[in-house]
Image 1 (tube, rainbow, N blue to C red):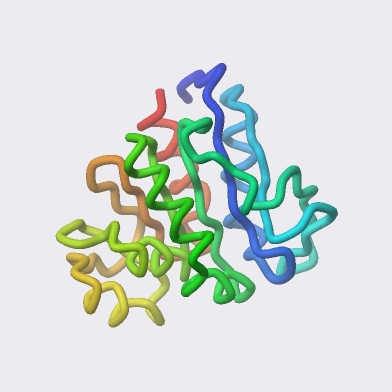
Image 2: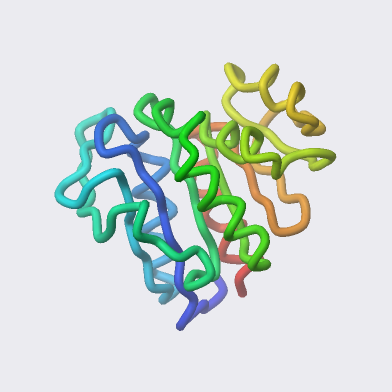
Length: 173
């Protein structure tokens, strides 16, 4: 695995109902690769996953400057539905992309990127429930797995969480 010492990764999670594997597996991989990981959400404190896992939230997502990070990662799960139409989350994605940063999303979270206009003409995947939205926003739908198109990485769901994390590390390395 690549050593990405000094790289800063922001992970945006739902405060309630993030998908445990999609947060915890990549986070461990990032930390093992020596990246600095910041967890952001709608509030600070202990965020709770759908399956009962927890993660400490370091920052309120409205206070984040995307340009300070090498990658911005949007974690999926049922709680992420609150972010799909959220202007603050979309601005974070747009700011990261315009600053030339890596932008990644898994499960339903690629719809945040689609709704922010970042997937127009890009190959992307997501949880199957998001296929029509991604296509409607101009994405070139890929049925599953992990898809990288330039500096945008999308993943289809919890079963590819580790592969998703490894792909982010590879592109940062």
